Length: 329
Figure (cartoon, rainbow, N blue to C red):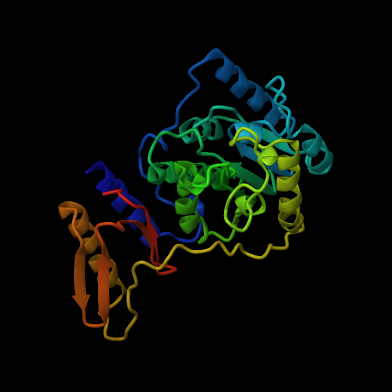
């Protein structure tokens, strides 16, 4: 029932989504309940971020996330300054004066609490780069809601900031794309596409070869964090997006490969209106979730099919598209 409630919550929020993450309804779960620091180290990190924010009011770019972001400059982690040289070349000089808000070990709930408790208050960035979710132990669906909650907070507190949303990097595993963090990213992208202030940056494309495998293990030596060459590759391929955003020229909207079209809702004048379509769609989900079986409703103008092995977890009516994840029900 918990999964069904979350499914319906996300579905309803997408159906009434007004075009800005600031207006998004966020479901309540372990990934979206803000979690205060539980150690002296984490508390000190937070306090240092709040203090630094007061001196970073002119920062054009902020980076938000966990260790992959933290290691850009590594100012709090001895020996983990893998991206430091790239950082000083691309981001720390004026006028960008970037502010690194990465904290190693953060889950979405930890990061969300930080965003709500002073770390971005008073800032006026033009760009916020968000990479978070790898440390979550929740389902991809719940993790994606945590990612969206963080971006919503940024859109509320820094409404002028454009967001570059990106996944964690691929690993040497040939099935790295089955990691929960990457699934969560793809799920969240189905909602962020509706907000024209968010750019879904599929950075993994630059780290893999034609077969989807990591093209050079040296780029991500521990299968999570980039090396200096990995950070350089990341920065080089993100630079055109940053330049466009800082110039207030929207970059070409990302063309993420959409998931396979596993369900279609026919459009026809015979259909009895938008409200009935939405109601029938939700009813179909409830039926499929309740009996955990394939469900089909035949309408005058088409069919809605939900298969047991390809269960639906979300829907955005604006684009008439679906999000799929095996085994959620």
